[in-house]
Length: 173
Length: 177
Image 1: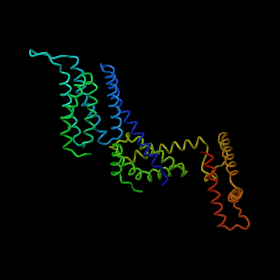
Image 2: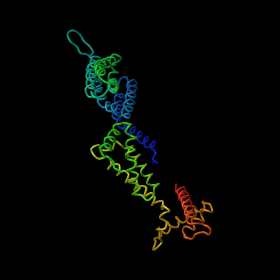
Image 3: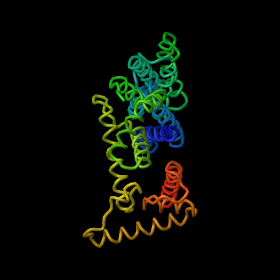
Image 4: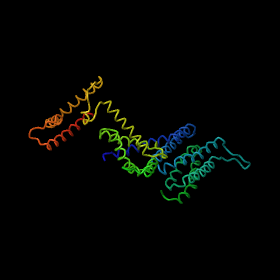
């Protein structure tokens, strides 16, 4: 047999890389849009770059890591959109007083996102679930970063509370 | 060679999913089938191998185009068929052919294009013959005129002829690369 398996493997990896870049395009568009509207454009761009890079790597690797990208990014859009909408509303005022909703909304959105990831990736192991939570965190942070550090902490706390118990119950892979 | 369809289809789906362990399994399953198919379509062993290699690189590079609901072998052989067609068209444009078929070429009532192509082939053959040593040239000349040299026995001459033709083919391939 005089076939060159190395060239075939390289062709396979190049094909996977091309496909990963193509499928990460919507995420890149989302990042570009959020960078334009965000009041913290440089932070949003930096977080977005990390999100796109992580998504491309996961999609290129494939298997469970590749499969977790779409539900994780979609889940992360929940706190992202919730934060954007809440910031437009501003304060919630009651007879007792006024309060900002941004941080609680980021936290609640993250609880929903974490639960969604844990449910859709129920056949995945700990590592893909953790990666999915990370991707959801980065996606949600595109919106919650405008809230400030509190938004990011609320986002992280919500994802932690929902995904860590799910991870503990699963096998490592 | 019999190819079991279901394991191949399963491995192709795993390959599509990103399972790198499936690369060598799919390659080992497909190479004999694809290279054999290309050998039947093309006259030249070297061209057949090149076409088979290019076909498998395309299959692996575009694995996301494989439809998991259909048999993988049909798609793979379709890609191989197109690669063989490309190789054949490239060969026609270059106006070259394996030397084994040189005796089949006849001038007859040839068109001007055929005459030009034939002149090019003869020029290439002369150039290649000039690159061989005198012993090989003499052997090839005798082989194509069916005259045995004095002092040469049949078996010895056959061996010399075989080696001379191998060197001629190798020189011709270098010329066309």
